Length: 220
Length: 84
Length: 201
Image (tube, rainbow over all chains, first blue to last red; front, side, top):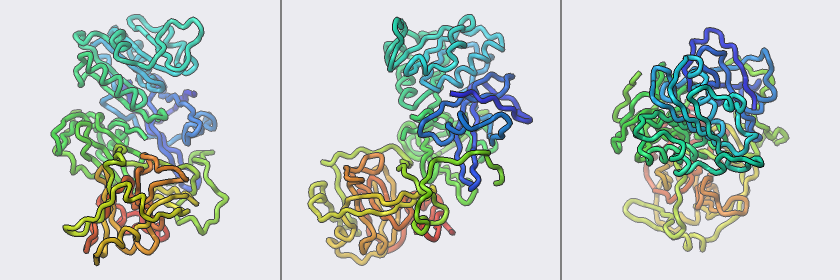
């Protein structure tokens, strides 16, 4: 896992939840393109957090080869649907599966930097505690933010948090009641997002109040 | 190979339309399901990119890069309207 | 396109290959990428049939009848229009010749049709004379659904989009009717050795 900070000339600014397209080109012209959510809030330096996938093509380069001073080809910022602005005063429900935490973390940072007080509940599903990204930051949440983890594969001794894949019951525990008018952002692998989004609709969330962003099974 | 959603073609559509399109509202010509492009079912790993209706799976958009030019076929959409 | 990412090499490729086996613009991979335009169909063997459709007439085989036909193992190179090639791939299937023999026809073209609605067009002679199979096994195992199982068309001398996954039959035609990718700009014939990727190539 590596967070790469980018200096982008003439950066137009971005919104929390947006992403970048990164394109790598080899000398023989071969190119590969991937999407990465922006991990930082508007006003902060643009950064992406990349998980190294063993069979990956782009992530090994970004996490191991890329050096300070190297240039990257970027397109962005992209997105207008999976974005949060502090003008929205609805309670927020953020649900992350694996690397789905990245755009949600940008939202949390934006909330803090903008002085917003909207109540937030974050549910973050990871395989193990070691897989949790931004742990130090999430363990010291700002006022009004409640964080719950669920570790699906392995839990440390004495773990008192959730220890299973997100299901209807877990969602019912964590989610704001449907009547609260909350806005939900769900991000992660496709199957995770579908389970959670369907679960929230079953709990009474209007479908247009559940915003989703699906990453590939390999985390993009 | 799991499908993604319309967020994954945000960049491609930005290039093609010169505007943010994930919030554009599309109407499926087959079943009438209406919703943001961000909610379409997207298959990226193919000779082209295919976006399908989440309701009925009908093909709404096909994007193929032909000799460096992105060709966009929107025949499956009855309507596509920007909202932002 | 002059921007080069320092130190980027892309996926590990096979470089120790006979270049005469690699069509222009292709690189050899040991992976088997899964490409799809839609959800993976799941047709049970009990429902599955393969048909040759000739105007109003149709000759169909159930899975059991199909399995009872002579089949053969072949090792072929395959070339995807997305630029990866895979050498010495091992398949088992029924030669399309075997199926065509059972139908009286004077067609010049075929349109392969599949579960999920995919189609692709070929000249009849490109699926005859030992050039094509309906393959149901890969590498000694039943063909995985994500790779086209229960059965796919296998036409290795053309770009692999012509080797239609989840194939359910061939429509015999007098005229050439563009299939799915051909309609969206891909080449009607698709010879990798002449790099016929797009219409007009």
